[in-house]
Length: 196
Image 1 (cartoon, rainbow, N blue to C red):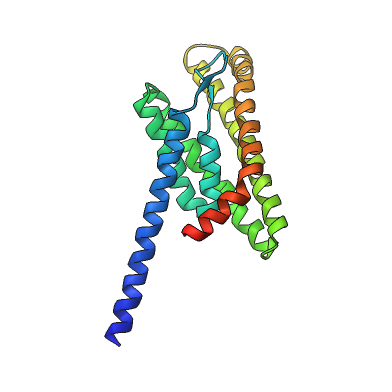
Image 2 (cartoon, one colour):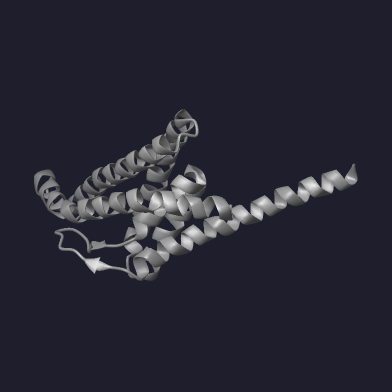
């Protein structure tokens, strides 16, 4: 009996370690997806750029689930901000990313369960959730940019107009992310299933 308990305990610990390593891996590739690949985009508010970061955030939450995806995505994006001169944006990034991941991760879990093992339906659900993440990101960016400009002294109309002019950069990143998820979800999932 003690052998079974030890074996079960070891398996449980092995799974915890494996989950921790996979979450750390997604944190690292999220960070590297921004650090290694950045194309600056024009905007009235902030210094946006095209990057791979959100691709890895969404891939992480689709493969690991919302909670672990929220951890890896939030840490990856926040660490990037802290190490690259965007410290003032780190708290906003932390909150926004955690919320987006938890919301989209929960929706994906429900819809994936309804797909009932049908790979085509699951793929469709993954792409829909990537679109949802992108839409939430656009809305949050608009709201947060408007608030930031109002805190700097702009009136509501001027702040909203300024935030709106910055949205094309966010939309470009969202479209880029959705296209990448549509292309990469199935092959990356196959690798992930073998690895996990």
